[in-house]
Length: 85
Image 1 (cartoon, one colour):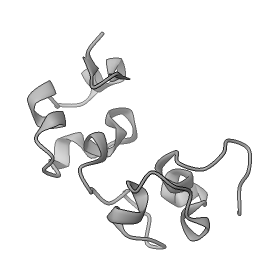
Image 2 (image 1 turned 180 degrees about the horizontal axis):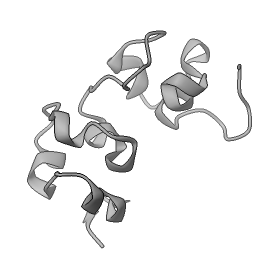
Image 3 (image 1 turned 90 degrees about the vertical axis):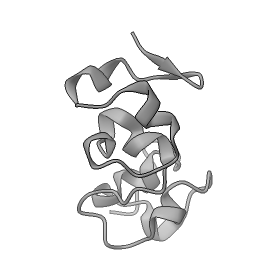
Image 4 (image 1 turned 180 degrees about the vertical axis):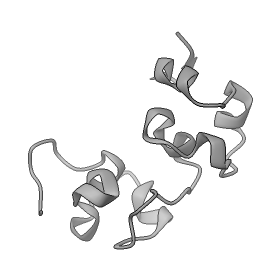
């Protein structure tokens, strides 16, 4: 299991992403997956999410316009089972 900043990235073994890339705060395409927490919040866009910006997806608060399935419910920042779609 790979642990970075207290986050469990054990599923990142399925992508081509190393711990250094998860910590560099640069959006690396190979790390921009749900399994890798969209490059550990490096302001990467969620693939298929056009409703909100990368900044909204990583600001630590639930933005209602982003609380839709295509935006992974604000990249997981919204309360589980409380969806707008």
